[in-house]
Structure formats: structure tokens, C-alpha cells
Image (cartoon, rainbow, N blue to C red; front, side, top):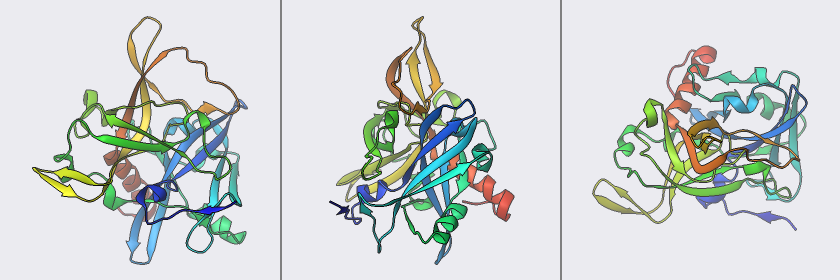
Length: 288
């Protein structure tokens, strides 16, 4: 039985902002990570759409596979047909890497959308607009402790029938506006598993939120950044930072270290820098 979601609800829209990235590595192993879609408005009728993930998700990948729900009317009817895009050979080469030592990369959705259109398919997805990226003014309103949610495919788990990701929740464990350890990251108190690499992180206040000294009634959605690393305790008892690995498809994950349920999130400013660098190189533009 198919089901149509009410897309006037913000949470339901967020379900369609991510894609499951299935990759085949050069060594023949298969792995899963998370990608998410960001949009840039060019004019009232035109937008560019980018798929973003961690560099370590696509490193050493010779082939990649993306799965989209199909659009029917203005919505997607779940539990029916999906559209699978396999990019064989040199999958790693289609990605534009962050210009700095930041674990982010992007690829344009335009060629994928065009290929689907040639095959008579219109893909259904939602994007994260620039307007909800955390800005400097809003940073000053945030507390060190904020409820957060993030979306992805932890341990490769997802709704296989409807091809939908998993929502996770947690809290910030360091202030979003303070560069943790001098890096453009902050810490979240949440279980970050393999497959969560590349998951977008949000504040989603449904009923009320604080702004300055005032309490505002209503909802608020802020894009904070991207899951990249996790804190672990190694065999000697020392705490270290490690990239969240992609999860191996069809195999159980063996924990060789103790995970501390603390994740490292790259802040949204670095996503803006990544997109600006790509557009400067391809369109001569410098502002996202």
C-alpha cells in the first residue's frame, strides 16, 4: 500500500534532503555513506542543486550508486518505483573537493537530473536552501546546549521499502559558534555510527525558541553543519578523533574501540566556502 506524506510539515520535507550513497571501492568492497542536497537560487525561476558529502566517503571509490524517489504530481508516492543512478568508473573524479583541509566535497545534480529526464523520469527530492544556514547574528542567540537532529543511514540502515533515511536526535556538546580545538567544528552528544558520514545536522524547534532575551512562539529550522568524525577511546584508554567510516554493506561492524557517543560536526560556513569555490571555478561567481 502506497502512502503520500504531508509536505507542509518541515520534518517530512527533511526526509527527502538526503541520498544514500552506495560506493564500490577500488579493493572491491561496498560501503554506504550519506549525501545531502543544497540549493542556490540564481533567479526567481532558476536554482542550482549540489550533492554534498565527506571526502572520505568517496575516496578510493571506483563506482557509485544513488537512489531517488520518483515524483508524481507535486509529491512522491512512497513504496513504489524508485530511480537508481549508477556512475561506473572514476566515481571519485566527479567530486569537487573543499579547497582546504576540510572533509567535504560536492558534485552538481544537474547531469543526474538531465539523465533521468532523458529516461522520462522526474526525480523527487528537497534541498537545504541558503536561507536556513546558520548566520553570524543567529550564532549569538544560541546556547551551548541546543537540541539537534541529523539524518542519514547509520550502519547502512534505512527504510528499504520506501527508500527513506533515519532521523537521529541529540544535543550540542560544545557551542556551535566556538571553533572546537581551533578547528571549524563543534561537538554533538549523539550516537554517530558508520554510514552517518555526511549527515546534515539541524536545529528544528517546532513550538518556540529563544532569540536574545525573548521567547518566540513558532518553529525554527537552522542548518548547522555536517557529521564527519567521532570521538573514540582506543585500547590504551586515550581519547582520539577518527573519521566516521562508511559502513560495509552486508557485513556486521566490529567495534575495535569504545565509541563515546560524541560526534564531530563541520560547521555550515565550510559548506558555503565549498560551494563558493566550486562556483568561482565554474561560473566565475564568488558568493553563496
